[in-house]
Structure formats: structure tokens, C-alpha cells
Image (cartoon, rainbow, N blue to C red; front, side, top):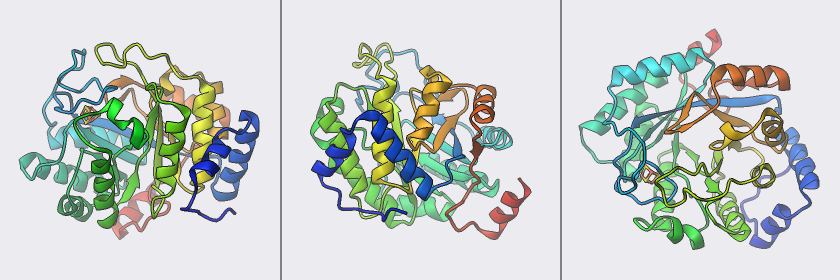
Length: 334
Ligand code: SF4
């Protein structure tokens, strides 16, 4: 079993990333087998609980208020509605439920109180609860943790050098600061990025180095392929090839052997054979459900068929965590 390292140099990451792709794939598959059960894939459901109208200017995002996209704006959903959706996701085999709100940052208001109630309710269902709500302070992270939140998602998106080309309304250092608040509160970290935004290989390498040299590796590392959305500044970007996804996933797997590397946005466009290559490369997590926040995602039946075909099984909730007694009881039932 490879030792976890937090001191990867840019040269080392670059050397791994640039290996001949089949060799890289083989090595990543080996690391994956040494550290994880390769037949297990975490199935997460992502629900947009507050959509659109965001003041930020992330160039890839149809939810930014300043771009003219087809996104249907809606205010924060009611707690009951979210509970119903979480319960359906649970019945369909999801063990992690992620809630996304298009906010720049969390404010200590009634909407946040509602999110806290959602977190409590979903935690009681026995699922790992994750939120992605924008920037948060240390005390907000602690409040989420106390409510039963398991993970907080906050993507680096790209390298610090390229960040200003994609987003101008906040700094890379803001991202890092929120991730520190998340870590300090004892939450698990979900952080990754997007490829296909016009960045160079060096930017992908630098982002992977930043993630893999954090004091503790993020427990989840989403690797997204840009889904270009009409109306956003990146609408005309060409799609990335499967080989680029394989390269990113395999490098992430070698650098962070124990993390859940998530094949995220862009999966809708991938035939099963391409997704299978990503699983070989070490992807160990997917999003289920018809939508990924606002972009289409393969449907649940299609995924069940793929799992059967490839001999994959969903990972149970809280595999590495310390579930409460109540949660343990729920998990044993399933
Ligand atoms: S990615 Fe998040 S912060 Fe950026 S515009 Fe979209 S909703 Fe807002």
C-alpha cells in the first residue's frame, strides 16, 4: 500500500500526468487496488436547493445572474420538499446527499437556519450529508458540523494562476480560507476542479498539486469536464476528450490514493466504455440523478445497468467515518 504523501512537487506531478496514457492508467489502477475496493463506487445525489441569481461571475456557470441562460431561478426550497427528495435518493441507493445553493457566501439568516434543519433531517436518514453553499466562516462551518454535516464541497476549479481568467469576483485565497474553516470544524473536505475551460496542462497539474499537498488530502476530489452552457462566456469551448479525463483521474488517484475521486460533470456525454476507463483509472464516486445542479446527468436506471455490466456496487455510507448509533442502525438496515 502506498504511503500517503503531502509533499508532491510540481515536477513529480507533471511527470505522473505526462506518462503515456495506458501506462498511467495501469499504474493508477494498481494504486487504486492497493488502497480501495475497486468494485465499490460511491453514489451521490446532488440537489440544487437554491438556483440561479448568483452575484458571482464564474465563467462556466449558468447560475450567475449576469449571464443570460435558461436556468430557472428559484428561492431556497422548503425543508419538507428537500426531505422528500433525499428520501427518494436514499431509496434509489444514494448514500450521500449533496445540497447546492447559488450563494456567494453563507449569511447567518433564516435561510441558513433552514439549511441547518435540512442537514439534521438528512443525517437522521443515515446518509452522508454534504453542502456546497459558497464561502463560509469558521463558526458557520461549526454550526453545520454540529447539525450533522459530513462534508463540505468547495472546488478550487483550476490553478491559482488561471483562476483570474475564470472568476474575478473572488480570489483563490478565499477558496483556500473556506477550505481551512471546513477542515478546522472537523468536516470532511470535497474539493476538485473543472477541465476544458481553456486552461493549459500546467494549470491542471498545479491544481492537482495544490490539492495533494494540503495538510490532509480532501476526502473527495470531483473531476469535472466542462459542460459548455449557452449564454455563459465558456459556451463555445470544445469538449474535453475521455483521455484528458482519464489522465486527470489517474493522476489524482496516484497522488491521493485514499480519496474518493469523483467522475462528475460531463458523464452524461460519456458512453459506458468511457466511464469504465475512468473507473479503471481510479474514479470511485459518481453523481446519480437526472440533473447535476442545472446540467443533465445519466438517469438512475442507466446507471444501475452500468453497475451490473461492470460488476460495480454502491459503497455504503460512513465507511470511513464515525456514525452515530442512530445512523449505524439505519445503515445496517440497508
Ligand atoms: S459556481 Fe457557484 S459561486 Fe460561481 S456563479 Fe455559479 S453558483 Fe455562483
